[in-house]
Structures are given as C-alpha cells and as structure tokens.
Image 1 (cartoon, rainbow, N blue to C red):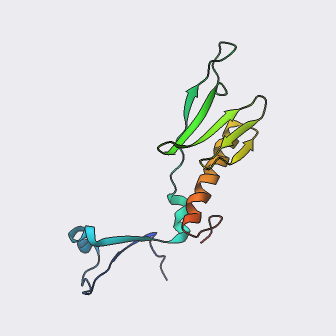
Image 2: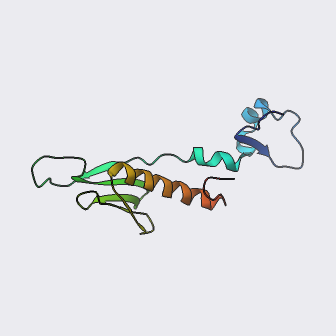
Image 3: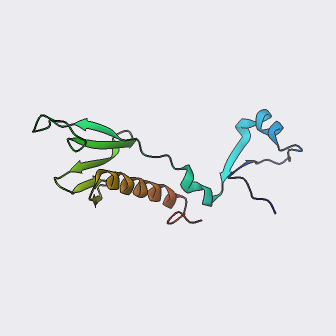
Length: 130
C-alpha cells in the first residue's frame, strides 16, 4: 500500500469531476478545498522569525543579550524574549503567559514549541500527534 500525500484537493458539488488530477486543479482551482493530514501539520507550522529591538548596552559593547527579541505572529501579537541577567531569559507569549529559559537559543526553542502547540490545538492535535 502506498503512502497518502500530505495534501489532498477535494471538490464539493452535485456532479463529480471525471478527471480529478492536475487537470481539475488547473481548470477549477477556486472550487477546490485543500485537506491536510493531521500528522503532517507539525511540519507545516512556519518557524518564528526573530528580530532584535536594540537596548543601549550599558558597557558600550552590544551583544545578543543587549536587546529584546521579538517574533511577530500577527500585527500587535508577538512572542517577546527578555534577558534578566546571567542565565535567566523570560518569554512573554501572545496570551501573556510567562515561560523561562537558561539561554537565548533555549528561549527561542521554547517559544517555537509553544507557538506550534497553540496552532495544532486549534486543529484538535495535541503534542504533535494525530
């Protein structure tokens, strides 16, 4: 038995399309609905894109901890990573939840995991499992 594709195009209507391959996709694209296997969803979540809002470095030397890291997922809705000195990073989620991490990379990974879980839960998928 062969594997099903991650995406399947489906047309709804009272008359079936006799050739539902690429011909139907190009001839009737606006009538098609894309269905995605739940197990394919985790790989379809786009990675967060991080930008640095510069803080003035107190020692005059700018480093990666001298800024507030922001990943905007919707206008005015962001993940924000702040450094609190040493190995203490705090992630503020779009719903004002607070997460903590011991490094900038760990903070970015935690934010990405939170973001992916939030999207998957909207589709009824928990923990990346279908």
